[in-house]
Length: 122
Image (cartoon, rainbow, N blue to C red; front, side, top):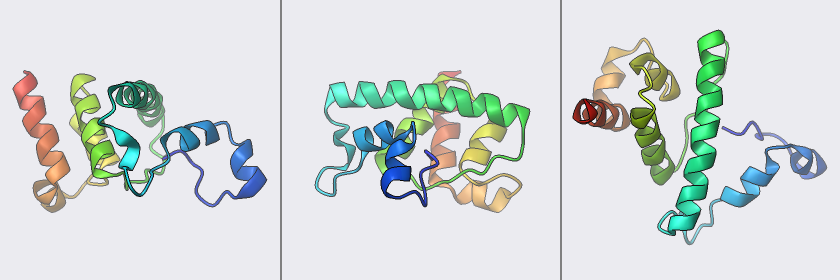
């Protein structure tokens, strides 16, 4: 998601997004410690800004590769962000890798949660 895949050593540390990687790196004993309110707020601020930028880029170009593999806590946070930001269904489908596949949309727990929260918000 940060575009750091494949980078190592100096190239990895030189990336402007490396600070986010370091800040939110998953510790195997306590994944992202999202129970800590300060950490959660910091993550949400970053995730909302990142999602806003990504949403604008995807609206302008369909040639953006999406990597779908966040932790369960990160995915839940993303879903809540999408609902709160009133993201269109096509965007959420793209972010979840479900576009043009009705069978997977019905089976996706994440997409079903998005639809449920979206309906509750109306």
